[in-house]
Length: 102
Image 1 (cartoon, rainbow, N blue to C red):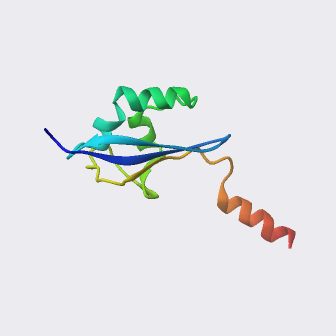
Image 2: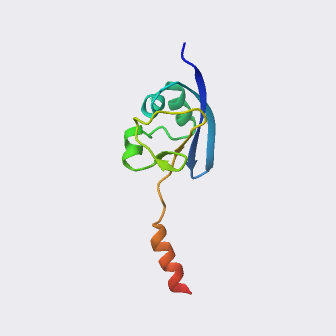
Image 3: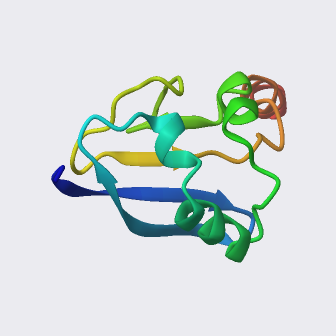
């Protein structure tokens, strides 16, 4: 039987950061893991039921340890999977506006 290890899923929402621990199988990919019923049920409970893995990857909103990753990425014990919310404003433009005020 394959070894079961744990990883963390973090979801950044308007209400704040949510996280939970999930098991995964050895050599399981991010895409395989994301399609699990337990992961989908947790996302629904957090109000994020509309998040599909291919959409998150194409919008660079899915990553591991702050780096954007594709669905074929093999997971490792202790990985921190992160789902990012869309930016509310362009950070470069905000810096420009602050600089103009000074």
